[in-house]
Image (cartoon, rainbow, N blue to C red; front, side, top):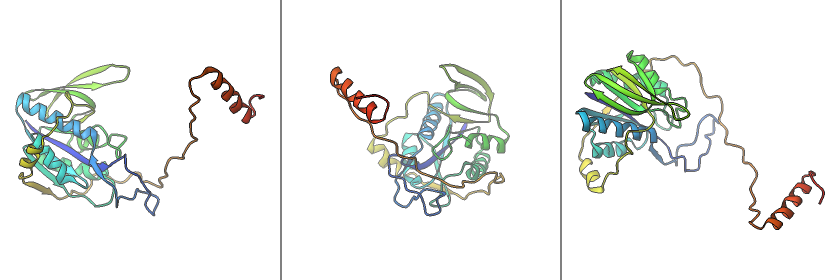
Length: 254
């Protein structure tokens, strides 16, 4: 089985975000970038499939810092790593990269394409459906367990209220991974140093196979709300303070 797994680099949400001058994007000049968490689980699921049934895993990364995360992917067990060229200082558009992922899946004779179910720049989880549509392959998102038996895939999809559904799919297929069967593994420094020798391939982007149907008009930062107040643990003191607060708002008499 040949598995292609997509790794997207996204802005670190713990960093301070500022809007660009056009008001339609964020300023990326001083941002740190990290691997999308869901894509991290997709990588782990690919490595688990390799270990349990045998497979070749190709990791393709897109975004700033791709080389660093590809070395990590090689250290965890990826057989081939490829950096997909993308336009700098712009968000990773699922619509734009889907054609490139589909073309690479064809070139690598992939039997399975894995990516995270969503990212902070793809909150609707569109990458897996786009790639599935372009390849005309079956697609399931929200998966938390994948079992391969030859060309047959048993895919468990997480639903609400603790309900799960298992699908039987014929490969090739495209899956959006929510969680891997096991937590992503830790990589030691020695493995990372060894993986740094792994050659990193380069892939040019393909033109999008979709016409633009929507665009960002404006972004805005969340409105800052009011502050909280700790009233303490003494019931009498808390009661007095509550009365004072309500009186100040005209809701009670002091």
